[in-house]
Image (cartoon, rainbow, N blue to C red; front, top):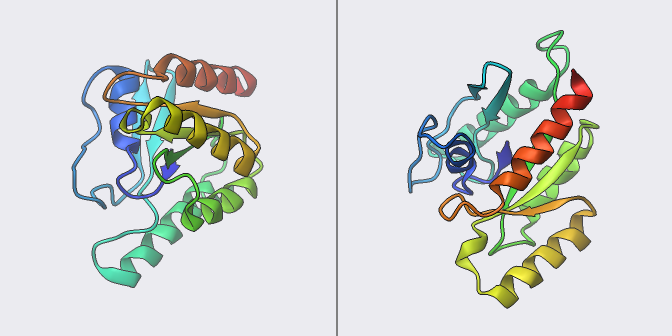
Length: 169
């Protein structure tokens, strides 16, 4: 899972497994390492530090960027198989340059990508439709509306994860 700080990556993991396994906080920058969560003894969901914010200033931001790049480097852990990347984007802010830059970087991994329109419940119905259309147009890939709080989109996200997994087994 990739996304800006405080976009809801840890909350989504907790919602997907229906238990609190990932630490969450209202304060951005809580996730400082790549956290691996073994799901159903079959695969891992990985919660990466968010981009765009870090306590400790520019040095911490660069540290997080290096960690993420190393995580996706195939030479870093030979034999590791990636199924795909869930790129979480706050549905309230679908056109941030940081998200576009991250998406361009993720594209270079050549992995399947789905955009998760996080926090969709914070928008009115018409705003939800507009945000999803904006994300679809901007990124040209699957967009999954999601609310960890309300459970919106969790089944669809699980389905995508399982489809990706079936291609790697």
